[in-house]
Image (cartoon, rainbow, N blue to C red):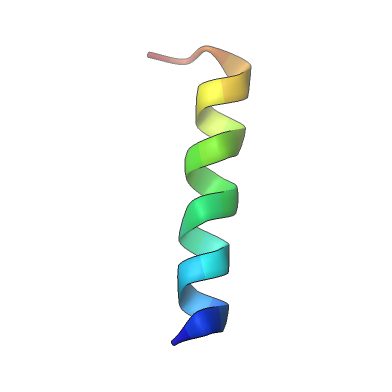
Length: 21
């Protein structure tokens, strides 16, 4: 579960950093 959470967090941060939204 921790691994999945980390992956989702990484994807969320990556999207936020890229300023996609």
